[in-house]
Structure formats: structure tokens, C-alpha cells
Amino acid sequence: AQSVSQHNHHVILSEAASLELGCNYSYGGTVNLFWYVQYPGQHLQLLLKYFSGDPLVKGIKGFEAEFIKSKFSFNLRKPSVQWSDTAEYFCAVTSDTGRRALTFGSGTRLQVQP
Amino acid sequence: KAGVTQTPRYLIKTRGQQVTLSCSPISGHRSVSWYQQTPGQGLQFLFEYFSETQRNKGNFPGRFSGRQFSNSRSEMNVSTLELGDSALYLCASSPSDWNSPLHFGNGTRLTVT
Image (tube, rainbow over all chains, first blue to last red; front, side, top):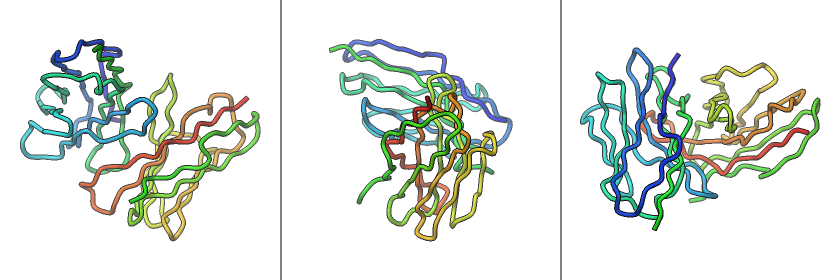
């Protein structure tokens, strides 16, 4: 069975600081990787996804993530955060055989202070 | 285009009762998935339906069931409710192709007393 670990549960940053949220997964086969974001009072939205190809993936709102297969990691980065990035961020993985069955990490709550 | 619509938004039920939650996917989306979100367990996959057939199922007891209708709308049912079933239940829809992401609704918050 696959699993996802997000080591940072709560991150507090000042505006313009750089962000890196860790995500490690456990699965021996081919995986598809995602980052979702949940802004306060809103539904889950896709930030970016990786299926294959270039391991550096760019998403919406200036976010990017790098898939490092040897480390089973898919860390999320943003060079300069804004107050509007305050939200909860979820890393998720699916296998090639169960693409609609996402396994989510426990989430990271990001608080950006103005 | 309207998003994923879940009804009702809030529900309060008593232990032992049963409950039915509804999800209307985005027009044209044929896949509907259900997830349970709790503070302790996080987001957990319940099941996925495609063209009225259950295609994937998570690790939940048989008290949790679902179905999908010919218009792609979906319902999930929980029978013999337990206190631990209190959660936010999220529905997500997606088109047929595997590379399309899931679009989530705002969820139904179920409280079991």
C-alpha cells in the first residue's frame, strides 16, 4: 500500500520568504504525484501534478515541485510567498493502477504574515 | 461552468441512523470519487464510480456504500452511524481521461451525536 508523509505540520513565514514543503511517499511502482491547496473556506484545488517527463513541474501561482525518484520525494517550492498563500497544502499520490484513488499526506498549514 | 455541488452542506444525525449524501459532478465529468476528511485520519479515499460502476474502493467497512446514476450524479450512504463517522465528506469529479485532475466540491459536514 502507498503512503505519503508531510513532515511540516505548521509553517509560519513572512511575506517574500522562500517556501519549501516536504513530501515523501512510499510505493514501489509507478506513481503520479500531486499538490493540492485548500484556502480558508474554499474547496481543494490542484496546484500541480507530475505524471512523467521533466521532474521539475510548474504549477499555478508561481509554485513548482521537483520529483526526485531516488529519494521518493516531491517537495513543493515557491521563491517568494504572499499573504494570500496562507492555506493548507496537501501532497497526494496515486498508482498507475488506481489513478482516481488518491492517498493524501496529513497536510501542512502555511501561515504567511504580512 | 458550475463546479461540483454537494448537498446538504451540513447534517446532524444520531448514532445508529443512516444518512445519504449527494454529489452532482461538473457537466461532462463521468468519474466521481468520494473522500472522508477528519482531523485524526486526514483525507481518506472511500470509492470511485465511473459510468455507474464502482471502479476503486478504499479501506472502509461495508456500512459505507455508494452509487452513480446515468447522469453521473452520485450518492453515498452510511448505515448504522457511529460517532467516528463524524467528518467532512468530499466529492470529486473528473473527465474520462486519466491525465485530468480531480475537481473537489465544498463537502458535506456530517456530525454524529
